[in-house]
Length: 280
Ligand SMILES: NC(=O)c1ccc[n+]([C@@H]2O[C@H](COP(=O)([O-])OP(=O)(O)OC[C@H]3O[C@@H](n4cnc5c(N)ncnc54)[C@H](OP(=O)(O)O)[C@@H]3O)[C@@H](O)[C@H]2O)c1
Image 1: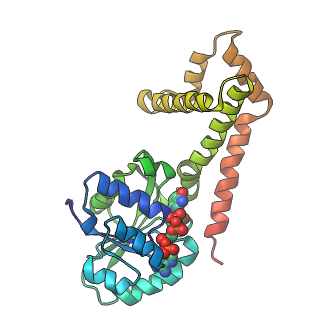
Image 2: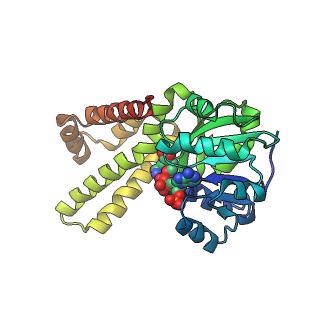
């Protein structure tokens, strides 16, 4: 099984999501700043990374690949740029010897679309698709993964991403709905948390205290499902005493079709992911 510390890792794109992964990988000691190569578009971004000690940051892909081995290459650019960037990578890596493992975090872009865009310009490569979520920023993220590689060949890629949290392998045909449940769900939950805290505020508690209580309740509730493996509805029943306060609130949720709203929320986002990923 392939595994090593201080391996070279390349990031094409150095925006929000690349920063999450880079910061986690360095903070965990998995590899050093010197082993990280970053390719950005503007001088401003390049200077900002260099100021943070990432000296192998370049605007030119050719310059980058002279300094850092392109063995693990994360594609962290916006999805609409994928064809242009694959062409640029093909031009730079066309004569590179040795296998390159591309890891694309671009929403909606399939492994087949990437393969077609490389169009044999890169001699020896594999593609892994990853979908990290925002909590990767605090190393509590979840990243979906699917790959053309076999499980044992994925070990280093998994180790890199595990610096940001949990990795879940999933068949590519479920990637859209999986991405909604891990990538978009934090936004749904932030909205629910804010609304519950507004309820606290309406009933006299400060918004700050309300947010702390609700976020902490979410934390504990989620951990109970993960740690105990109990069904959420069994846990809900444990909180609802007969004729009590909680069941009065649950009845109000049901009256407004809360569960159905959430089911349809996931369906709408999944549909949108399909539309965005459809060939133009
Ligand atoms: N944000 C999320 O919650 C999230 C979650 C999961 C996945 N994703 C995916 O992550 C990807 C990146 O999103 P983001 O939010 O990190 O984007 P972002 O902050 O806009 O960063 C994009 C980066 O790409 C660089 N770039 C643009 N053109 C380039 C080129 N031709 N060659 C090299 N670098 C180039 C930009 O350089 P400059 O800095 O110089 O402009 C910038 O650093 C997207 O595909 C998105 O679907 C995002």
